[in-house]
Length: 155
Image: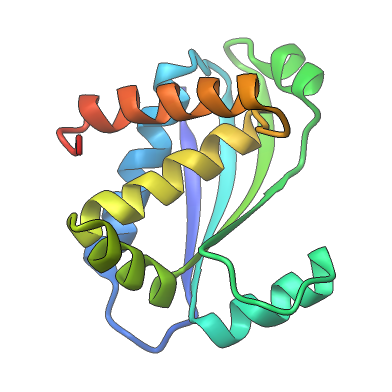
């Protein structure tokens, strides 16, 4: 399997370490979920002002969230594509670096853990996970924690 992560930094800050952490987290999530097809993921880092604009444009909200996920495939399409030799464009992940720093401080953990958490959460969304109800929310949370623990970034 070969996954290409196309990373773009729109913050004006040096984020190479954060980019590496997010890329490792995405790959860990894909590995944990048994994704064997080749794939492409877009990863973008923004500041709160741009995230607020994106939320307004795509979610009709007037605030900056910590992360946005834009899956390109429906869950059944992920399953259909997931065969060795196939290729899938999984979608886009947008991480708000300002919120990531604030949440790392708020929760008392490292920025690396927060970036990895946001990347894993979004990667799972790209693979078809949602958390519209409590059962799905518990499932995605447990998977996130398992992946972060595997990465050595447990709480």
